[in-house]
Length: 253
Image (tube, rainbow, N blue to C red; front, side, top):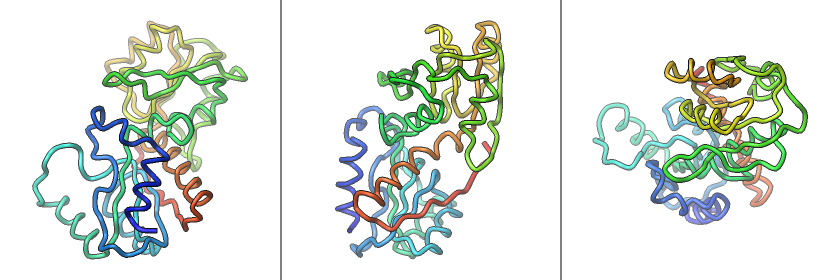
């Protein structure tokens, strides 16, 4: 495997090119290596120095992340950005990033993973963002309380950042949009959803949810976005027999 063959694999798996006009992230290969073969790929949520060092310590030649280093505009090669790039180049560590395609994908994505954990049956697209619905909604296979739902989406035993039981005792419908999608709570209210789950809450939507009778969970930006990364990692190991490792560096946010 090389960075080129893995680029082809990831683009085919996640339909990355469909998001070229929608996503501010520079999806795909962000930093190449010197052409060496890739024997091991590390997977993580964020491109940061701690993750880079742990990937090198794990003998990975490529790092796959959800949040990369480039977001659609030129950046000066100074400060932390310079140090990160220098580290990647000095250690010949390739960097691959997939943002919205990994949120939206109906099989391997963050929101598909959350929907599966919650038992959402026949999930339908939800959460309009730049003309594209990147989350999912649907009826729960088994009614859940807010507390039960919060327990289901914990990662590594870390509880959600916020639980707001403003509606029904038992929820029969649910919508999920991972990461920073607090404003999509308004869409959930408009559509009569019982429970809305995202990564981060917002002061602006608190009273809207309260007065709208919407149960809401802020699961944590990080914790709601481990699922897609891990699903792609597992598929990478199964389909192309790649040696893989997940690097867990939680932000607590």
